[in-house]
Length: 269
Image 1 (cartoon, rainbow, N blue to C red):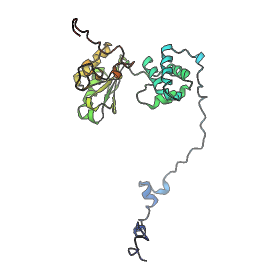
Image 2 (image 1 turned 135 degrees about the horizontal axis):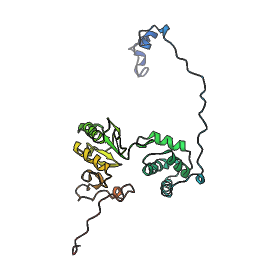
Image 3 (image 1 turned 120 degrees about the vertical axis):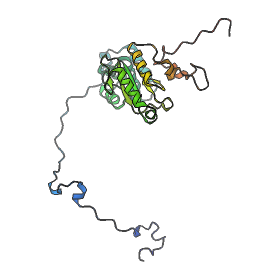
């Protein structure tokens, strides 16, 4: 039966009625350049085997590594939450970074000794995630969100204001090592746009004037930075100030930094 006359039950998809495909382009068109195909140098894959630089570091012996007691306890608490010890790698690295300011080789070795894994494994985890630092980047870290919501509300100018206040070119660490500033793709707080994470706490909406104030407070190690703009201190919807999510204020990172409740006047319940 000729094409176009076949019954739909014989050729339901009409695949036989599709026109012939155009001829494949010749080799010259495939390479997409004006050099004749015969003159294009073919790079052969190297068969030379690379020699390892050395044996990987083994799992450290706990008896040979001096681990601060508080750090070891925090890592062990994290390990108890997971059925497999490697699942605690991220909390362990956070504990190291909070203690030393960055994931130092010594700190990684200490965490590896507690967890019973190789330092190379923990370093591979730390190098994968953007918020872990494998080199010192300033005592205080400012991450300015530059994603679409914040960008539409002036995040680029806010980032520039932070950089100018810290005295860095674009982004990086200040000369005094006090402040590290960089843009961040998204911090997931569009309702605070434009916003920034300062020492792992969310602030916003921020102005360019707030940037200068925050950097000045960070340089003098103020206990509270921009308290009026900190999400942790903001009340829940319809509630009074300080009535926010207690899980945030009670977290070990924030302990000792939340505002103390005001004493009730005498004679009032």
